[in-house]
Every structure is written in C-alpha cells, then in structure tokens.
Image (cartoon, rainbow, N blue to C red; front, side):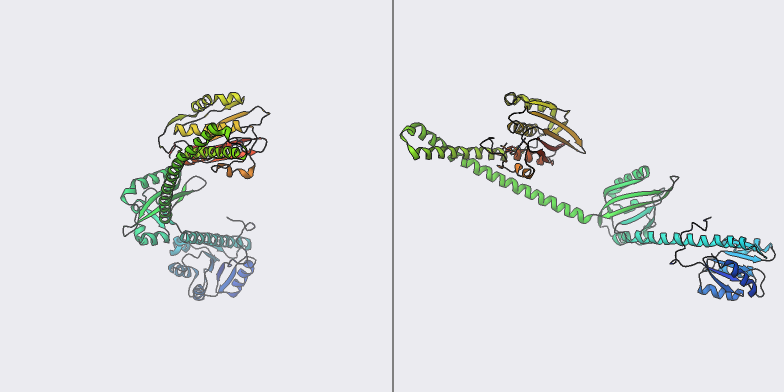
Length: 506
Ligand code: ADP
C-alpha cells in the first residue's frame, strides 16, 4: 500500500476523489463525515438507497460507504443495483453495519469489485485506514490512466507506422493510425493479420529473418524493406524495432516502427543519376582538355627546338637586348612545355578499375628502393608501422606514396635530419594512413589551396615543382571515396592523412 506521506498525486490540479456516504440516519452521516473530513476527498452524502443512486448519475465515485440496515432498500440491495450498472459496477464498497451477516458472502456483486466491511461502532483509525487505501488506489489509477492516454497520444501522433505483435504467433496486436492510412487496411483487418502479411512475396524472407533476429537480440535497426498496401502498391520503409522488458527480463511489449522512406529513396536515386551524369561530363571535359593539351604540345615543342637552334647557331651574332629576348622566350617556352606535361600527367591519372591485393608494407619498400637516390642525398631516416593489405590499384597507390615522400624530401629543413614516419590504422571500412615529416610545415590558411592543380605555397626559386603532386594524390584518394588532409605547424613539420577503403571500389 502506498503510504500517505510519500503520495505524489495530491497537487491541486488533480480532481479530488469523491466518496459516497449512505446512511438513513443523519447523525450517523455526520459522525462519518467528522472522521473522514481530514482526508483529501470530497464527501457526498445520501440518506437513502434511491438518493444514492441519483447521486451516482451526477458524480463519478472513487468509493461508497453503505450502511447495511436501511428501510426500503438496504445496503446490500443498493450494492447489487450498483453492480448491475456499468457506470457504477466498479465502485469499491465498504459496508458499515452494527452486525456482521453471512449475506455478505452470498452477495451477488461479490466477484465484481473491491469491497470491505466495517462494524459499528467503528474505530475512527480503522475506518480512516480503510478509506485511505481506496483514495490511494484512486490516485494510482488516475496516474496510470494519464500515462496510458499520453502513450496512446504519442503512439497515434507518430509519423511512423507502429505495430506491436504477439511474438509467438506473429499476429498484430495493435497498430497506430498512420499504418491504417498508409496501407488502406481497416483496423479489424490489420488486427487479424501477421506482420509478414504486410510484406510482398519478394521481401517475406528478409522480413521473416528480421523478426527472428529481433526475437534473439530484442532490437532491429534500419532494415530497408518494402511493404504492400491493400491495393497492391508498395511503400519503401525503414524497419526498426525495440522490446520493453520488466526488471525480471520478461517481455512487456514490442514495438515495430516503419518509416516511409519512399521519397528519400527517390531523391537518393535522382542524386545518384545526377552524380553519374556530372561524372560523365567531367570525364568528357577532361578528355577534351587532354586532347587540346596534347595538340598544344606539338607546336610548343617546335617553338622550343627552334629557339634552341637559334641560340646554338646564331647565339654569338645576336647581341644586347635581342639576346635577352631570345633567352626569355626559350625559358617561357620551356615552362609552358612543363606545364602541359604536368597537366597531361594529372589528366592521365589511371582511370583503370583494375584491382589487386596490395600489401602496403611491400609497396612502400618498393617505392623507397626506387627513390633511394633522393633518400641517400637527403639523408632520410624512415620509420614505418604495420601497414594493411588492400584490394586496390597498385600503380595509383604507388603514385600516392611517391608524391607524398618526394614532397617530404623537397620541403625538409636544410639544417635538420629529415625523419619520416608512415603508419596506418583501421577506421570502420577504411584505413587511415599518415605520412609525417619534420620539415618546414604549411601555414593553416593554405591547407585547401595546396590540393588545387598548379597552386603552390613555397616559392619556385627555392623549391622547384609545378604544384601537381597533391592534386594527383587528391584525385586518386577521392576516386576511392576516401579523403586527404594535412595537419601541420609552420617550422615543425607536416602529416598528410588519407583514407582508403579496405575493398577499393572505383
Ligand atoms: P609541388 O611539390 O610540385 O609544389 P604539390 O602539389 O606536391 O606540388 O604541393 C603543393 C604545395 O604544397 C607545395 O608547393 C608546398 O608548398 C606544399 N607542400 C606539399 N607537401 C609539403 C610538405 N611535406 N611540407 C611542406 N609543404 C608541402
């Protein structure tokens, strides 16, 4: 029993429980009233069975105290009438009588609801305790009813379709309005169906497996399926489910929610198509630039060689400013030639979808061997962690490491031993690689710029290069759905991080 002092539902806004007091003697009513007035309840009196019945039409009682011995209609008769009416059948009853009679045990309404018995003259304390029990019961039921209504409201106002099942039979026990509106079924129909009946033939196996998994794990997350409406149309859904268990682990209820994702899927499909189109257009554009660059290269090489010839054969006859002009033109032509070569290299980044098992420990060893001249010249120490084996294109992976390592060498500090560290760690379906150096570093504001083709941060007079290496790295990594980014502090060194999928898909 809930104790009076820690009872929570007595705030003002809660309706007070009403107690019906029935006795044909006003002095008895008065003494009942005196004892009970300290309780949080509204006391309503009646001096006969008929008056009591009239009062039940106007009030909803939480308890009735009936005198047994009354003229016309005694307390038991009144109780029998109350038990036969659906509005009063559940009102708990306390009989108040000077004598205890056996009639209580044969009383017709006995099995229908709570009742109790108190003998006159009653002990006020005893009566108070009994009545308090029913007041507490009233407040508990009120709280239960409130939370039931809130739950029902939430259940029906959810935009998702919700159902709960009898897990043994799979039959739907309850569903909310959105399920009825979306599927076109009537509530009576749905409540005879199993959850599987909602799925079209081709998705029944998947749905059955999902329900089995739910029985095992007590949870289902984001399973994409299709349900079928009454008219045979389909709705793409995301199925989630949760079970609610009591402290002893017993299943209280399960909730399956189905969110309509038809629109999301349609938009996703449109985006996919648009992306595919943009990719094709991009490829066309690259091919176009490739052809132009290729064609430009021929006349450029001709200009270059004629300028070299001019210098070689007539150099000594050309004097003063004219000599400078020829030299500047040769330099510019040379640079233009390099630009075109680099642009072609960028555009040529292997589009091949060829994949093989690549052991990155071996790959890095090969790259270092091929670059051993530069490694020796710069006196590099390199430390590598355990690297993964990925299903990926070997040439592209090699190019990636070649570019990053040659940058680490190029942008080292002149007066410090260059140390490079390479390692990798797994993150979900990707591996994150890190290539760390202790070189000159990159200012933070330039982090984006360095990945654009022909963009450089450090001057060409000091560090030769065309600004293509990182653009190529980005193109390779993004081609695999990965990302590349630097972390760097000027004067302290740079780490280039990049991610590659475990199973490289172009
Ligand atoms: P390039 O090396 O030909 O200049 P990249 O595209 O490889 O072209 O690099 C672009 C720019 O990024 C470089 O010019 C340099 O300023 C900066 N950079 C790249 N790698 C490093 C590094 N390890 N340390 C410092 N700066 C770097």
